[in-house]
Image (cartoon, rainbow, N blue to C red; front, side, top):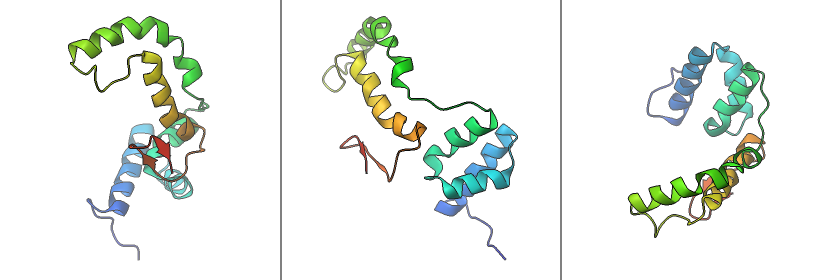
Length: 124
């Protein structure tokens, strides 16, 4: 007999997340559990399950987001100044988009392995 997963434990939290995803998407819990077991974990579970359920393909973000670079630079600059974060955030909005893509694109293409190291900004 399998023990009941407990909230606050890694296995319990993963099981609760899978059940919640199944309820929200109308997917089969067993199918999602199998995808979770075969996948890299909770981080990419939602993307992969939802893409299969809704029959959409996952694609890299940067080609789609690149046009935002020019349109959003002025708004981003104003927000950076208003937020008093000039010293800690990149000057160019293109750099922000590149950083987001560096994190997300390997997950979306299922090439991400290991864990994200935020200090080094790499998957390891």
